Image 1 (cartoon, rainbow, N blue to C red):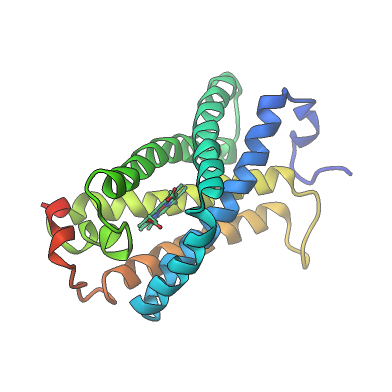
Image 2: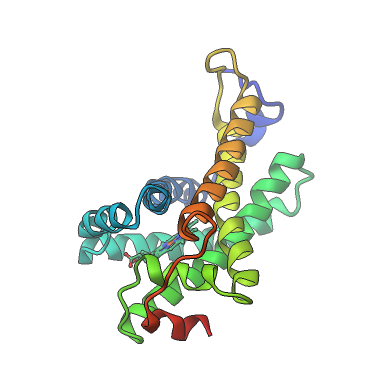
Amino acid sequence: MTSLVPGNEQLGRRPLWWQMHYCSGLLLAVFVGSHLLNHLLVVISPALHLAFMAAARKAYRHPLGETVLLVAVLFQIGTGLRLVGFCAREIGDNWRRLQVCAGLYLALFLAIHVSSVLMGRLSAHLDTNLYFAAAGLNHYPQLLFFVPYYSLAILAFFGHVAAIHRLKMHRRLAAITPTGQAWILLIMGAALTLGVLYGMTNHFRGMVIPPKYLLLAR
Ligand code: HEM
């Protein structure tokens, strides 16, 4: 099928590790999609967020599920950084630049985020739940780091997915072009970012954090 996005037809056949980056990206996108939905549920109530997390953990905390997830994260970071080397030589459009910059931020974020979750769990023996994530978002001056750190992660995830979707999508949906669909994904990312911040700060009024999590926010 002919692409509606100029330049998409010339991408040619790609090496296996490049194709695998796409496949493990799809797997991670399923996890991240449900992970972000989990964080959005705080808007309704922290109890609902915690109940959803308890159910989801049965899959992603299962030794097999977590091993697959952590290997996919490492593989995604490694192949993603290699791809940046390839793409740096191309003169791309703004969508390509968004894809590369968002991918670079995600690689950095994932490395820090996953190590801090694992250290919180294995070394500080904390339940890495809502309060672990929300501690830094509800205390000044830590929130000056944590608000952009988490917001950019959600925006980068949607930016990366939107740019790839625009490139791979070959048809209009309800008369919307692939570029229009990519814009819709970006707007959804911005709305979700606001929603998650709103929920995790108790509707911008400040969330009460159990004292054991405050050690990390100091
Ligand atoms: C506001 C945004 C985010 C917050 C507050 C957040 C918070 C958390 C928390 C609390 C955990 C621990 C979960 C548990 O112990 O069950 C976690 C795990 C994780 N998060 Fe996030 N996260 C956010 C965004 C993201 C994004 C955008 C990604 C990926 C691009 C991501 C990837 C992961 C991964 C891979 C794990 C490890 C799962 C595991 O092995 O236990 N997170 N996150």
